[in-house]
Length: 338
Image (spheres, rainbow, N blue to C red):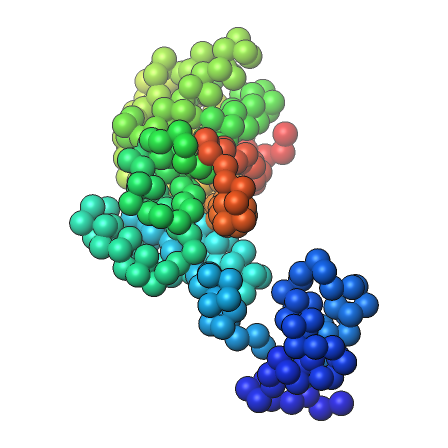
């Protein structure tokens, strides 16, 4: 049977085809419990045959919701925002909801402006996306709808913050190197004022201590999140500690720079030195020579999880505290198989 154009189809048409009242058709389409399964099946079949699309605006007036979520970020152009945003958008799209995106660019005045703007659009809830895993001031007091913080921890323990588990990621990386028989392991990472960098160092030390090993050089080398720093730091380390057989790097950019220096010095990867990166940034990890073993933060899943918790809060079941999402190790040629 040819389907009708959805623009001309109303709820009354669906109810007539299914042989039920308009009220029953509405309850069936909105998954209300008081509708019998067979009745719901007939209504859904009729809606499908007619290509019926519910009026989202009208539904919002009835339910008191606009079916939109505000996402406020501080680093839209950075490494972490886009994968998390994709996860949010995928989860919302499956529920026929929309996301309104605002980039505060780290500016407090711009951030307050966007909060007011999104509230004026009557969003149902907020997802606040940080630019690092560090603690940040809570914004919940200015927002009268549910809020979930992602990749940035609110300083209010009553808020819900979803973080990548950096300590867990460093554990995976270090245990992998130890399992390969590497005993002279060094660490090159980003600025020490990054909480993620400090958490990874602490976890690295715990694994090495458990294996009866010490970090080469005694301390990690803190610097920039860049290839240039990776090249420079690797040259310094190898000139002082030629016995190094593994380097765990704070991100994939650093690891790519380390790989460049190792090749320049005639060191074979992974035969002489194994390298592990962090982030699983495809542009670096997959194109590195050789391809880079690295830790994946599961950022898209982090966005989907944020939506799940926001939906629960909208249904009157909010959560609080800090949830750390496990990472996963992606093994490529820079370390070889365990």
